[in-house]
Length: 181
Image (cartoon, rainbow, N blue to C red):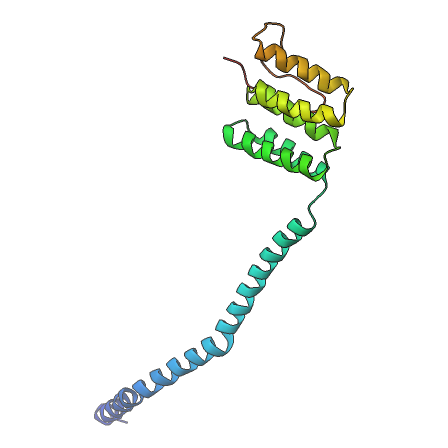
């Protein structure tokens, strides 16, 4: 074939393509919309509902069946090991209060919250309230009585209290206490 005869075929092919292109594009658009509405949107909706239901169910389970006191206590100690800023101290105190509320006879939670209030929050008044409550449950506990004496010493501004620095207390573990100012 010659050069001149291929030009009209090219022109004809381009004309046919430009004539059929809008219909092809519209068909592609309809196909994409059908796939979205028939497959993607329902799957996304099912996934979203499943995730939300799982979150609500897990939170509801924690409300209906809260974990035992030792779990809250371990979580509080884990929070304290991460840092000693005010936010972590408040979070740990909240977890320890949950532990005490869940099981008032779990002594380590009482000891930990009293130690936290005395040594890290520098609040002997709160510590004494916690110890007084714990002493109603455990009247002759030596550790509680020692903490009560420490809290009264701090409250009375006496110098024979626990020195600043890292102190190992059996009911708090290896948690560095804040240095007093």
